[in-house]
Image (cartoon, rainbow, N blue to C red; front, side):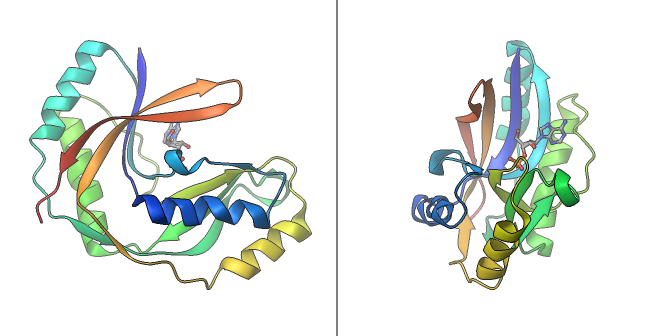
Length: 179
Ligand code: 3AM
């Protein structure tokens, strides 16, 4: 079985910038630059045959390329249970449209995607027992920081490998968007 999800990959320079923010919050488990992504649709465990069906459905996806603007720092989890630190992405109509188109393609291929509300974000770090003061300092220092916008010209099917030192994500295929 393979654990799959569909995401956008920011360009390498932007990923390097985001990964470089790790210096501002030591102790958290930062996502490596190569692994940074914006999840559009989490699929979960599938067989190799199902992965082929998914590949077919994503190959048939027709949606325009989208401009993605990152900005604003957020967290998942409450209080002492904060477990993820992320940079948000503007919830533009084009991005929402693309997310829905991907979800429809995945559904047509016979899968039931997770129905968490779409909160466009790029997870930067996983936290456990984070020092509140430091975390708030980090958020305050980066919340208004501008990042260069980018145009996502493809969606990527990723395989998630869960290992003892965290998840690592392997891009399996790119599906071009219409420019
Ligand atoms: O995009 P990020 O890295 O924040 O949290 C998981 C990760 O999110 C999320 O999918 C991304 C790639 O693994 N994820 C994991 N299990 C999930 C689930 N059951 C899930 N999203 C929705 N439902």
